[in-house]
Image 1 (tube, one colour):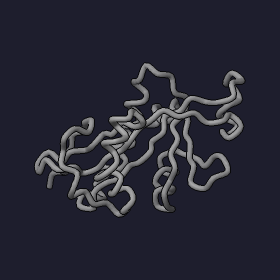
Image 2 (cartoon, rainbow, N blue to C red):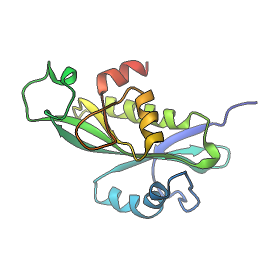
Image 3 (cartoon, rainbow, N blue to C red):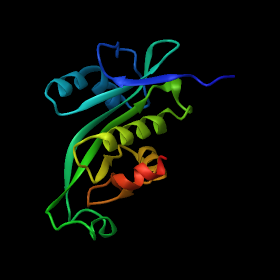
Image 4 (cartoon, one colour):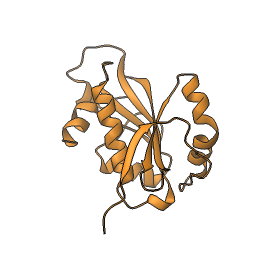
Length: 167
């Protein structure tokens, strides 16, 4: 049996109304708010489209961020210039539709986000995420992220390491 095929593209006019992950807040955001965030240039959204059915199978958002150098793990900052903040890419949201769970699509979307940030001409030192629950935290930890800062669920990984691990 062959695996489903997906293509990843920037969100356009695709139908988002039927998207259903295991997270109502992520679903609601995708159906009702992501378009506003794109228009306001506070986030970019990329989608995985199941090629056979032409349906949205998953999505993620990216935006620019910076974090106080005092919040970052010491091993990440010891060779950096002493600036007050570290430039980072924020993976704001990542969700996979229930019908496509267990196919590795979440990891593929994360990989695409890391590669996209790595190709950017804008300098980014790290990628940060805010895990919404324990399962999301475990997912990101599995992919090389570590907790940072004082708020729960905040994770960070040096972009250089993410790019190397993805080779």
